[in-house]
Image (cartoon, rainbow, N blue to C red; front, side, top):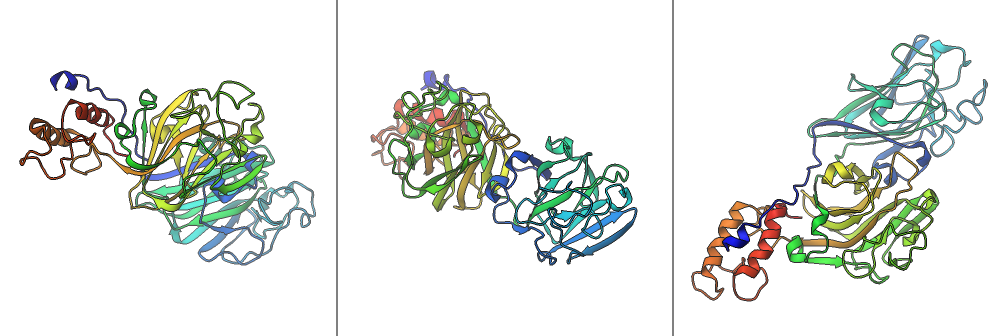
Amino acid sequence: MSRLMASITALSIGASASLAGFSVYGVSPLRWGQSNGTLGVGNATIENFEDAALAPGLKVLWESPAGNVGPTAVLPNVFNPSTDDAFGTAFNGGAFDGTRCLLNTRTNDTFPYSDSASYGDVTFEFDPPVRLVGFSVHQNETDLGLFINGVNKGKLSTLTGLSPNGGKYGYILIQSSGADTISSIKIKNGSVPSGDGFTFDHLAFSTEPAPSVEVHGIAPSIWGIDNTSLGVANAIFEDFEDSSLIPQLAIGWEAGAGVIAPSNTLPHLFNPLTDDPFGTAFHTGVWDGARCVISAMGNQSFNYNAGANWGDILFTFGTPQQRVGFSVQQMDRATRVMVNERDIGDFATLSGLTALGGRQGFFRVKSLTGANITSIRFANDRTGNFGDGIAFDHLTLGGRCLQDLNDDELIDDADFVLFVGQYNLLDCADPSMPAGCLADLNIDGFVDDADFVIFVVGYNILLCP
């Protein structure tokens, strides 16, 4: 065993998704009007300003040199940018959905565009405090400031990567983590009153925190290893070799070209060696077998420059899961991960895997609050116009780490000590062998070098899925 022990080397250690404080993200204006899932605000309350009464728990405050109004739960006016602007067409297109939106004036109606004193700051107040806030912004020509709970967090352009353009600015997503909550969001109209006019719509808010999960990435050097070594023995597997998916699984796509609702049957099978007339990008995307699933609409390849057809891919689970894993290949743009349609972070940051094309590795999500993962979405190049092609294979549901002999979700020195004790006894029939002979990882009746080879792979990975 000593010769085998010398081969132990660390492969990777996954990153945790939980950080205290607030996170701010920007979603490209090219995704204007997309679904709540794409935005990462699933199951939130939506206020679309179509009538004067605001959703319970929400108030709006306007502050400008010409005067203040609010905080109020009833709008002083409803504003349709296509019909209610007597001074021009600047705010046309400001509605994210429906026909109306919120304007940054104390009357929620336009003033002459030269009346800079009437265009001011807007504050959204939440009672009870919330964990998530999202909203669209339109028509700002200058940079805007963001205040959370009265504290200046900086400029939106710096926080989101979005640039003022006098049109559709994009969608802003703000989340709290840890013990922090959001009682107010203020959008400051320049460092001094700038007189800029802008609108908001599709305001989302929720008191529910993002799902509590752990995310781990395993480096691509382990690509194709057996399931026991991978730490997913006894899992349910989907390898996308035929069109019928395992009963718990459905897959859908959402992109600029349209939406394909989640289905238990694949609309197309994809073999990257034979079914891609546009190139060889996915040739290494298969974990096992000959096929995989990709982020292109309907699981078929399109011209690599046809960005509107390369979009989000959504995995949904009819039976909520505690552990989900899959291989990832060919991601080369920033991609957000959504669990239960809530944004949990950037793929590369969460997993420690590099999004630079080729094989990323194996990606694992584990719920820390039991079996409650109902969906996982890869939000494709969310700050751009979709466009990234990503391949997935060897999807796993459930399973357990056979190498985790003390069942503490780690494969570490404590498990090594238990393994050595059973290795020294060797025969599972030995009366001194602990019940279950758990170190017999290949279930052949003996705890020997063959089992140690399996144990070493899990020990190197360290974390259970």
